[in-house]
Image 1 (cartoon, rainbow, N blue to C red):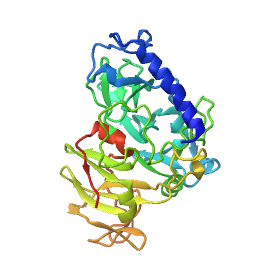
Image 2 (image 1 turned 180 degrees about the vertical axis):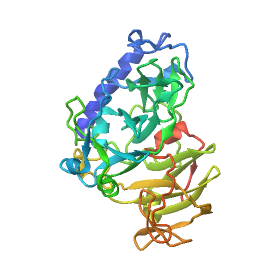
Image 3 (image 1 turned 60 degrees about the vertical axis):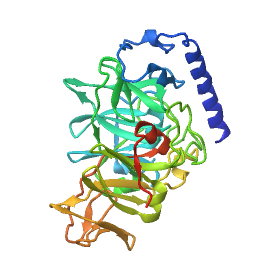
Image 4 (image 1 turned 135 degrees about the vertical axis):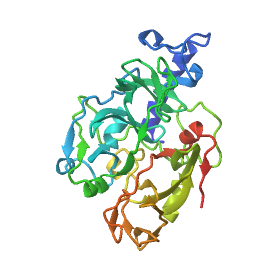
Length: 375
């Protein structure tokens, strides 16, 4: 790691150690507990597993009034390989640049008329979008300043329940045991979004906060040989290195992980997750958000897509041929977003499957019985 990140992490470790040492005798183990309206008597995980992350509540501020640029406007400040998170609902396609998410971690938005929270945890490399409606409530989310297994712990401002970002589960407070519903959120390059959605909207830098957007505050964090920060969870699953990236999903009671290094080599994997036939594919051209200080100049880690392989009642089998994704049954060509671009099925779209590209340690901590695909 570079010196700046080591200094920053050292400050957070000191803050964490101090906060917990004051409460070793018992009670609610949070120095700021009196400032919360949260019902700490109701929780689904041991409170001792939740750690101070350093910043206070909302010290990493959510974006609550998101503003958007057109694709033409965003081209002035986004590099082609910069990572964005694509969320599309009922024809409303939006890009959330990771250069903004890395500083805010949560965007409370309404996409296609649907209230959503678009979230990103840098320590887990986890970009996940959730429906914000729970029962009759539309929740607004902020950051607690806490971590569990190195993952962001969010809170909702309506009940001040605390939520685990990786699982979408309320783990402390009035709504403990409730789960948010995830919706597809695909990490792709800015160039890919602009090509596929020329009329799309792009979260801009008018967040109401001053941050050095475009700069990575976690320089060198995603070095695959490094160790995770503030991790105090289950023993490391040694099948993969802790900071190795995996494309992972959970369907029908089965969790599956596809190491990015495998996908980089084969480009396409046909599989079945739970009872669903899926295809996982990878393409180069997307920069890491956690490598160099300048995100636009960071190394290429590529991006992936996961889709239901069924089209018109037929299960397709995909391959990578002549630089393109093709199905063997019809020879149709498909793009990274699961759209048929040429051939018999032109105009069709594969149904996206909720997935993410995470650091292995983070995924395995919450899904310890994951099947790892190595072929």
